[in-house]
Length: 145
Image (tube, rainbow, N blue to C red; front, top):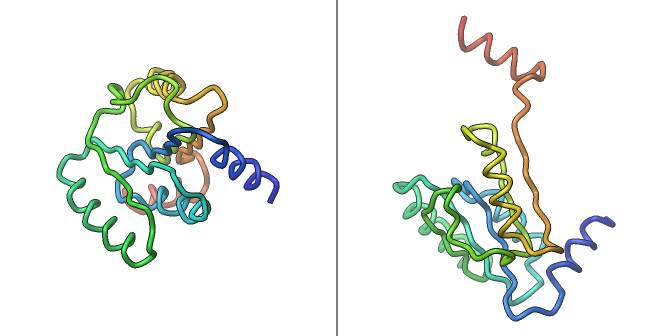
């Protein structure tokens, strides 16, 4: 895939420190999926960030299991607020934020903060649920009836 080659090239660029983070990582599933795509590239610092303090220890345990099973580089999980990112400006090559933005009171501020921590050539993958699609509407109707 052309887009995959582009992103692989992005993470293959020479750098003292290359960093990829998932904001609102929850279980870390999306971060593990992206890791699988780039698993052949060494020297990347993998980070997961979530505000859900009780969930982080469980994710660290799950991460250790997956890392051992797949012989992966480690993934560091952080507990922090999306609106107070503990990251320097222009410090990330790649940022993931999956199914989080639609839950925020001020998504525009969050997106602006995300932009600040990305390097100028960085890549952001941000997804949201489409609550206006037919499947979501039918599911909601079934839950409320």
